[in-house]
Amino acid sequence: MTETATSLHPFDAAVELESLTPGLSTGHTSPAYNNMVGPFGGITSATLLESVQRHPECLGQPLSLTVNFAGPITEGAFEITARPVRTNRATQHWSIELTQDGTVATTATAVFGLRRETWDSTEIAMPAVPAAEDVAVQPFPEFIAWAQNYEMRFVEGAIPELDAVEHPDSVSTLWVRDALSRPLDFTSLTSLCDVFFPRVFLRRGKMAPAGTVSLTIYFHADAAALTTQGDRAVLGTARTQRFGKGYFDQSGELWGSDGELLATTHQLVYFKD
Image 1 (tube, one colour):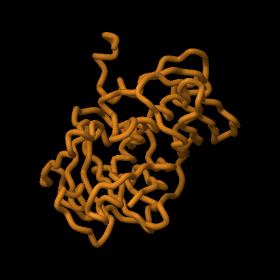
Image 2 (cartoon, rainbow, N blue to C red):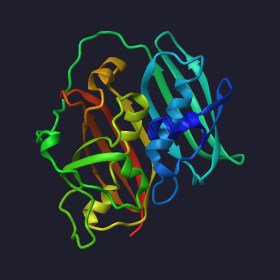
Image 3 (cartoon, rainbow, N blue to C red):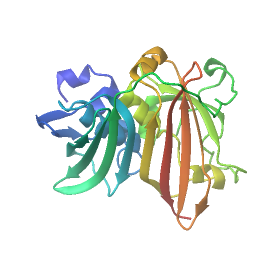
Image 4 (cartoon, helix red, strand yellow):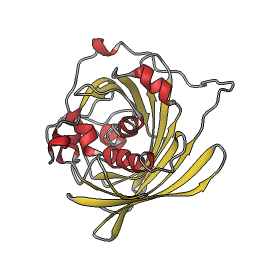
């Protein structure tokens, strides 16, 4: 790792890319953000978003991101291509691919755009919870490397202990922030949208083979809202609507400490009994 990289926040080092040509960049997986198998999906998604944000043709701010995990990402170098497929007056549509050794491992689409002031209304409500400082930190098992980068304070639905039993629902609600203070931006918000461990762990009361197949994020906050949030903890809550036949959905919300809805996220996850 270079001297420049060592001075970076661990998150910024993990999503760091080297531009080869406009739209083509290289990166390297970060052991600090490994999951049980391969890299943490949140860091992969954030890196894909970063590849668009650094493109010289990028217009506006992220509105949505969909990531399809087509195959395993192994430890080592990778290439990302990001291509604007259409630019309109207010929106810009992107196609993104991550490859290793010439094989596609992840595909994604993103929509960026220019926001303008309009009437607004939030129909869902932020869960009523204690303040972050009033909730104890609960660490993940040490072998889950990526989770060590986050301070997690579970209000409900913590990762089950080894002697846990089945849980009546799949809801987890927690305050979360970078363990090493870092102001929130779109890349780190993207990663936070994947901090929810697979809901099947909670329902069944045990860990089981599971992995995200597809992840979609809708960004409701603009850059100004993220600046206001700063490095304070965000409140995340997630649940599943349906388990069955090897797959389940997983929906989540991320709220700012001032009660603003920052992002919503939806996943399709495979699992084995």
